[in-house]
Length: 342
Image (cartoon, rainbow, N blue to C red; front, side, top):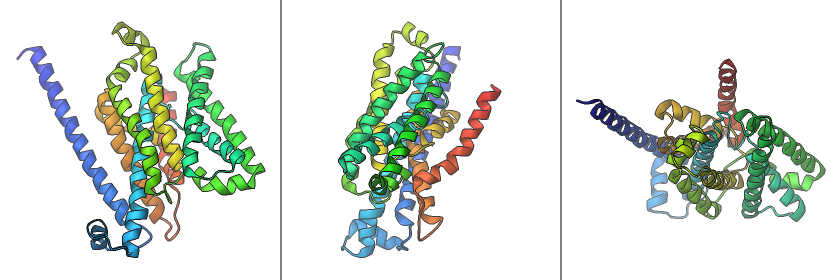
């Protein structure tokens, strides 16, 4: 067997293993979704859960399943997938292992826009929040890239991280000031600011679903180009890539995914930071595998975190935005220490 044949055989074997892993991840995601629908504050028999979908009779248990737990679980799944994919794209484009919607100020910008919009207009509709969040996410992304490019050496991973941290701190301080001055605004959006998927209905999910779908499809379509771009812009140009166009399309995907996620669930951190790193340990550096794996693992992580928040202090519950830092903060500290050692 020639070296070329051995390479093709190894490549085919690796592809089959990764495809099998993807199918296993989908299976685990399905089980996580079933667990999220099954368990909660109300003790509902599995037979009732099955009948809620096959023989709905309008009973209390059936209503809880179809109007509360199912929308909540689907939203958690989509938000986790969106944030994880957005974080993976950001890390690939910037070659910055600390890049994520939370670290680079996109979540903070979306939250700031929602707070300002609510303060000015007085609207407390989650539908209205979506448009504010998209605008805030887009402006924050542009501002971070602009500020990062002003530093010595241009748009380096370090400059981008510093710009994102500075902008996040600045925006968060203004957001806090508005909430202190306006008790009405704080009352209207304080639960949303904590980051939660509770109380969302299927209509809200349907409103943001097109944006999430477009963002995910665009991300998958750009996966090969992002893999090449993650090796360096000079390498990408030498291979005939239009780096400017790829960055613009990738930025649109990030804004759609992060903006829709923040709009429907509030600012939730760490998903976009830690999931891509875990995925790279499994699949390597090819974004054709990183992105689908990130979507599945991000959805699983959000479902588990939301379920834990419901079960840990019954009958009360913790918003998923408060549960995720308990998982993500230790990993973030480890990542910082690893980078400092390198």
